[in-house]
Image (tube, rainbow, N blue to C red):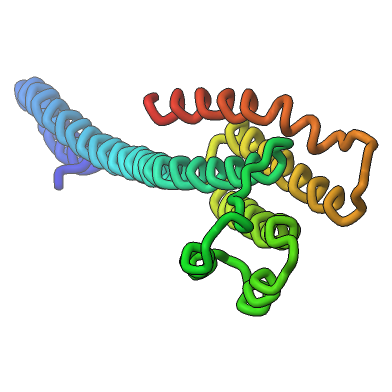
Length: 235
């Protein structure tokens, strides 16, 4: 490649001859210098373009990586949110049955033996409880006292499953939504524990704050959370 040092060397050799050779040398120098400058500029420009293209590619890679990560997190959230809602909703309604002051029970004492046998075959009571119930004088009372513990165990199991799922997957939810789920999760559990305590220490005439609050505020809190979940799912 022609360098600036070579140009000056050639120019010096021509100047020695003097006269018209100097003019020729000067003209040649201008031509060669321009070509040299153009070559150097093109070289620098190409290097600059290459560096810019490299930086642009790295920038695109980072943007695509961030976009892919955001997309995956968003997809995970839309998988977790309906499942978390379903589990919490199930836990709430099972708790609401247990906590409700109005309970409905079948009249076992009016059942025929065949009817009672069919009923007990689908009943969650243990086999020994079923045998005791059949022999009991007051079948209704026995059933009501024993079925409660099966029902509340089922409700607490649903609440635990909801809590565990939220603990494992809540990280994929928006912070404010996760906090709302956590509040409702604790609200349900405290009501169940309080209701169980009341059953163990009855007769209990003093109002229980957790149970009373669940009865008064539970459904409204669930509806409020439902609106938040629906809004997020349709964003």
